[in-house]
Length: 428
Image 1 (tube, rainbow, N blue to C red):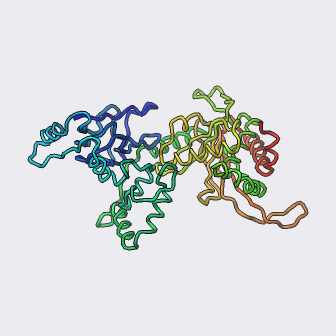
Image 2: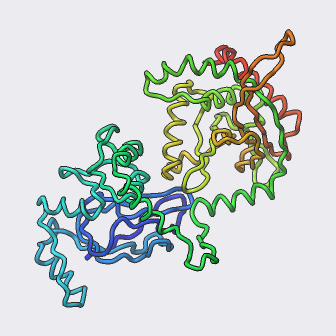
Image 3: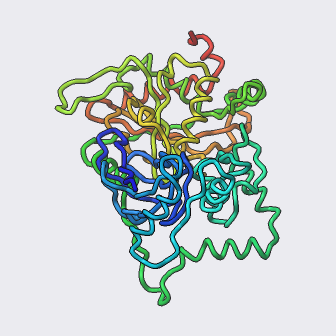
């Protein structure tokens, strides 16, 4: 029997929360099969089995804290490393009971694969693991489905969320209702209906709480609001969307926001500077690493696109798509979370019009983008016209950024967005 020790996840992390076990004691597991999901203060991490075997003990219950380099679970290695008979004998000896011992199938047999598939919610088909993200696997488990039964549309047979939803649409109403009722039962209030549900504040949410308090209490915020006419920008995006889709990329407005911001930073570099801890030096960064706030299930995450000033709109779109997907799954690489110099919070994507953002320290500024609305405006001749108006609110570090500075910077950024063709003159 071997103990699996929680590995060093990096970034000085010494502990993490066990979010969900995908196996139970006595389960047969396959090599690289997902075993458990743990939450660090950075992201959700999936831990897979180093080799095939039988799970004999789970050391850390779900919802509890696991320590790095401490045993996470114990397992009995399979016949690849020792005979099935010795494994059975060992498991029986460890159990200390008269119960029938778990027999491990011979290595390479069909039974081993089938058993692993049954234990992991049908994640194996034809002897191969069905590729799917942790979020999709969770959705499959919540509806008591099997990945192997779902028609995949993703690359290399990957099951996507849309595939699961399409599969659910084909399920009979009775079955769907039963599954929905089962998944909701865990969220039911106590019988008396008077006690609140208690949930520990851990992982990314705990870090967010700490950092927001620090930023709001240590940085004097200066807020500045403005309206931007994005009618021409929307028209340009519609013309470019088919070209981007032909390259396999989804072109949103975010790449335009970022590119215009990098160009504005070149004219007002103090918006891309940071004050040192002692508060006596300004550090001006040559690269513009623009963060974007993502509302993930794990909590607020702000991954950043590196060196936006050097990227094309298509390259930025590719990075935005990659980071958004990773953040929503709670699996952003540590490198993508570090090194940000200025941030964007697109609250308008959820329907908000105005917001007063909190600076993502140690950055100097952040902008909250509200939803775009079609509103009446006067043109140069005084006629009322229909224009797409977007509201934005800046927050700046008032220790070294004053109102005039952020207003001039915003005017430059606004100019590029209202006349997007002008950006062509500044592209390398």
